[in-house]
Image (cartoon, rainbow, N blue to C red; front, side, top):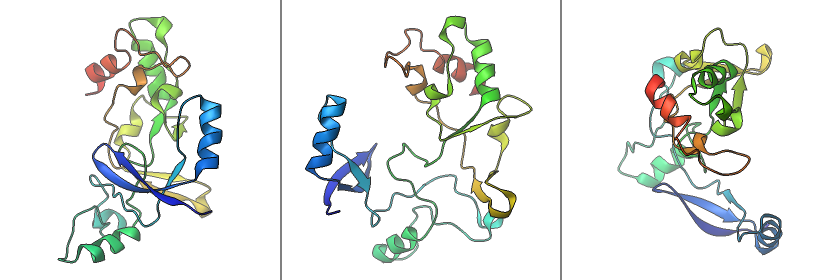
Length: 190
């Protein structure tokens, strides 16, 4: 596929992207009913996970986290390309995890029981079942994913800083008038 560079900014981070072309854009535009472009992160573009990366003691080496160590920034960027501490178009981190136990606890505390939230309100990549207590996942330093002989170990960077997205009904796109569940989460989990 022939792609052209397309400028993308996530918050204040410029991210190199490649445009999939007019045919893809036209199809998506017709399907969605709004003008859009389909892009993918350029492999040569680096958007490091800047904070909360695991330490050398935790993983046996010091991951690069966007701090330049030499006077040659090109060398530093090339080093970053070969680390696992990058993200693409996500807010800050490439993976978001939530537990069903925590979600159930949030729903029991909402003042209006007709406003129950689901995992879709939180946009997680991974939903965990079987936690022994609500918010247990906030204490985890690592998560093992996969069969024991082939598992991948992921290092937990931090708790998610909650934005207003969970207040938006994923079915209707309408934001809750009372600011729930964000208001509750800020009161009980801050």
